[in-house]
Figure 1 (tube, rainbow, N blue to C red):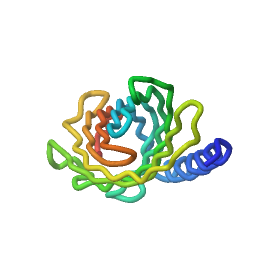
Figure 2: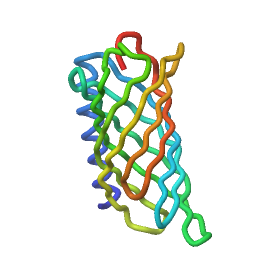
Figure 3: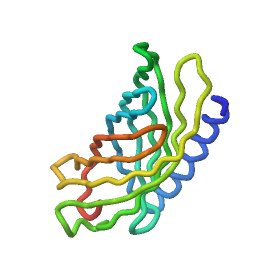
Figure 4: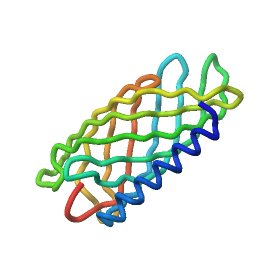
Length: 158
């Protein structure tokens, strides 16, 4: 996938996410730190937004970058993720909120072509703080993925 196609897809998705968010007026910023472990290990920091698509579904668009380490050599890398999450407890009736999700991740290392990966993950969102709610995700997509997430706290839903 070329960089131009990736930018076009991300722009189109941002337009859809903004349109959906404008209808519900609920955009939730997100910061994350991810490790992707496989034949090469990748460490990324990422930022993005989530928006609801109904009561139980959230769609996130993330962009991030960091380093990929393979054969004792490190190289710069980046990625864009589009992921949908199905929430078990969207109205925060319990202290901890499990969820599952799936999507697509496009990752590129410097001097290499980009690769797309299907992503599947399970996560749990913790109790909300005054500004952020923490979450932990474990999944597959280009390797075993582990993510620590901070999402903006919302009072009436996850």
